[in-house]
Length: 250
Image (tube, rainbow, N blue to C red):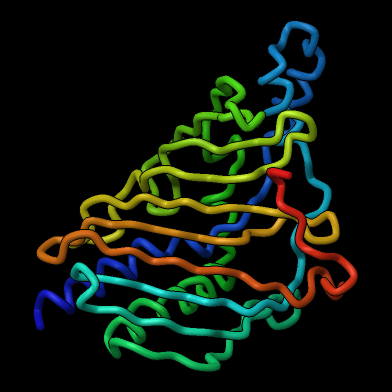
């Protein structure tokens, strides 16, 4: 039972990153780069366009969330479905519609994920993990076989919301497709290594997260996995029936 408890605590920590939302910063630096754009590489120009893009911010939404977690080599599993919403007046809210599996994983991990996001929104911590010049240095690399620009991201400080890894951008319109990497700060004593992968798309021109996945090495429990899928019902007060999801990697 002590092993199960340790595993659950570690998982609560590493899935805390799901509360992070994409933001922008560093406009003065971008302005100085724009003045010398003729000397920049195509990859750098694509990156600068991405960092300078403040259009289509996610302000409010209603979405179904589907969460699952597997631990101890499949011996412990749990799943949860929740209705979630975000707006300026009420903040982040969620309602659990159904859940199954390990009671410990459900309460400490899956409910913990939603509570961590609610807490982050209340404390306005989203910008602490956003893809901005205040949080990261960026080093654009080459365009891959899929035509996407891979940009290395390096955190400016050790923070449990920041990753050492990379992002993928569309080369033509500088749109975010994926973010992946290792957390630079262990979220708990029990969690040895945390790998995060998050995918993005657009709904009605607004960039939104579509999926979040994590794997972690938990002391005495081995590798554990977490996944969450978003199914949006409205974005910025617009029903998605009129604005279907468009993958950024189209």
